[in-house]
Image 1 (cartoon, rainbow, N blue to C red):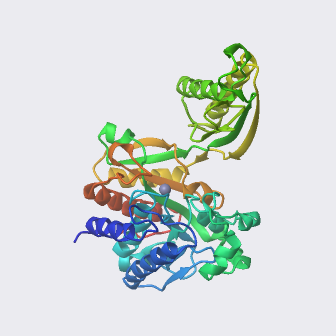
Image 2: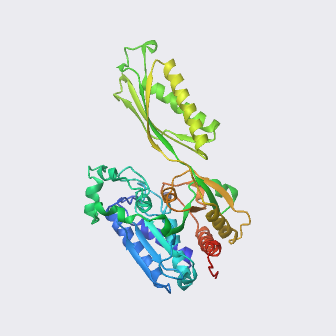
Image 3: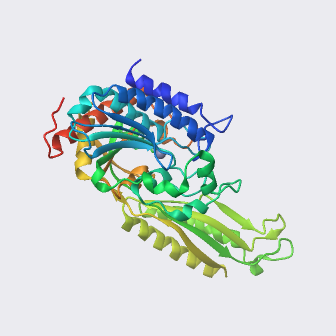
Length: 421
Ligand SMILES: [Zn+2]
C-alpha cells in the first residue's frame, strides 16, 4: 500500500467513527471525539517510532491529539503540521482529515531523517474547527493559540449540556484549558494541507494550489419588523410584510455580492408568527459576507445595508442589525508560501496556482502565534460539507510529496544549517 493509499484507507476508517447511522458526524467532547483521538494517537505512535530522536504523543488540555518529534537537538521550536478531525453533520470524509493524516504521514516518511531538521516536527489533530456542537468555531486551534475565551464554557449544546460539563464528562478539566496554549517562541511555523472546498483548482486542471490568504467573514443577524395582520383581510396597500422585505433583501444581497467580488449568503430565515394565514410581522435572517480583502468585504456590507435601508423605507418596514462575528483576513507568511510553492513545483507543476481561501481554517487561529502557510488539494466539483466530498489518491500522493518538500525547503531556508536530504 502506498502512503497515499494508506491515507485514503484511514479516511475511510475515520468515516466509520460517527454519531449518525446514515452519515458522518464527529463533534467536540463526544464519544466520537474520543474514538478519533484514539485512532490518531495510534497512527502518531507508529510514525513516532520511526524517528531516530525522542518523540511524544499526547492529548492536550483542550482535547487536541498531538505528536512531537525532536529535530537535530532536543527542545528546538517546532514546525507544526495540523488540521482538524471534527466534522459538520452529514460531512464528507476529507475536510480537515486530509491535513491531519498528511501531517502524520510526513512524520512517518521523514522517519530517522527528522533528526536532520533544524526544528522539531509537530503534528496536531484539532478536536473542534467546525463548531458543530457549541456554535463557537476553531475551539481546538484557539486553545493552542492561547486565544481561548473562558465564556465559551457556558455555551450549551442542543441537549442543554454546557461545554464545561462536556469537558468533565470527557475527562478533561476545564480549569486547565490554558495548558494547551503554545507560545510564539515554541513554533517556527504552521503548515496546513486542506481540500480546496471550491472548484478553482479542478477548473484549472491543477492538483494543488498555494493559499495566499484566508478571507475573514463578517456575520450578521438581521431582523425586519413589519406588522402581523390577517392574511385574508389585509389588502396589499395596508400590508407591512416583513418577509417580503427580507426576501427583497436576499435578492439584493446576491446582486451586491456578484457586483462587488464578494460572496454574501443568507443561510437561515424565519418568519413570525409563522402561521399560514398571517402576514409576517417579523422576519429574521442570517448573513455571511466574505471577500478576498477586508476592504472589498466591508464595501459589500455597506452596500447591502444601504439597499436594506432603502427597501425597508419603501415598504414602511424597519430593521435591526446585530453583528455576531467578524474576523480579519489572515495572510499566509511569505516564507511559508515560498516553501509550499517550492513543494508544489517539486511535484512537476512549474507555476503553482495561488488561491485565497473563502472558507475559514485552523490556520486563522494559529496565525496569532506563528507564521502560517496552507496548501490546497483539488476536490471534485468543489463539493464539501457533504457526503459527496471527493479527492483522488493521485492528488493525495502529490499533496504528500509537496508537503515533504516544503518541510525540507523550510529546513534549508530557516536561517540555520539544516542539512537537506
Ligand atoms: Zn476544514
